[in-house]
Image (tube, rainbow, N blue to C red; front, side, top):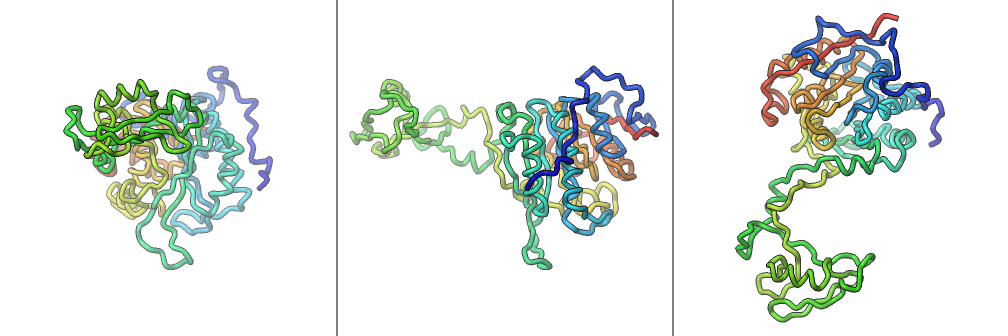
Length: 398
């Protein structure tokens, strides 16, 4: 696909931080709608998100650690509050215009996460490659959005996608967070030889020999007298002298009988990092759309306005990977306010944008409940008990 040049937004005229004197702000703070502790750094903007992003360019350029987008999917579906259908080029121009601004709002170690389904995912991926650079594409996450079967169509669509981009892939990869060790991972660690250092698992003692030195080719004799050489195309991970020291220090495992292929011990207590995030996110771990609806019904005591809300656990996982406490999070398609609510409970700062009346009736109302200490969603798992604040902004009259 050749991108329509009209998808591009000219950013050359935008000033750098601190160089803009704003005599007519696009948005004004409304004190009577702001809630909780003043000066919290959290904000809700009511108005068109393109206008809000332009306003943020003057105050928040290169400040956000993570941006999550849940735009209309342009899938032709009829939902409770809108018909999700635009011309393909019009839809793509609309989303990419916002993506371009968001890239400028991200820190160098920031990341962009976009929820989408199969209707536009491939076109959006190509367009985002152009906006962020193909080298900054990180991955595509598959989210199991439902566990029930849909029989009205040729295939039951049980998953959606989340495209992940980094402002700078190298910087982001070094600073992104691992997932905590799971019980399944911990169970791989055992202590068959009663090592006083505790549980361990064995890992390969040989590696590919593409960059090997002559010191990595030698024979190893096991306690039983069996002799091993590295497999073809591979070499030992250590030099002969270093390997002898590791064997002497009981850091090499030859199996219970002492004649197995040598493997290195990796101790659980020495594992400072968790595990790399996987690309398939199961419903049992991050929730479904149905779970999200139940969360909203519990909050608002009525059937939710939105047909496809995101569960709090899904957003929690995104923020766990991409941010730390105190980092700033952006959601320009705030919807029912899930991203803001989760960020608030997790100790992140946030800016959320919504255009319609539900910016107040849903988003603001939800954050007020969070400030009071509501116990739905992830509240119990993160130990949420209330507090904080949010400032409310409305589009100024022209």
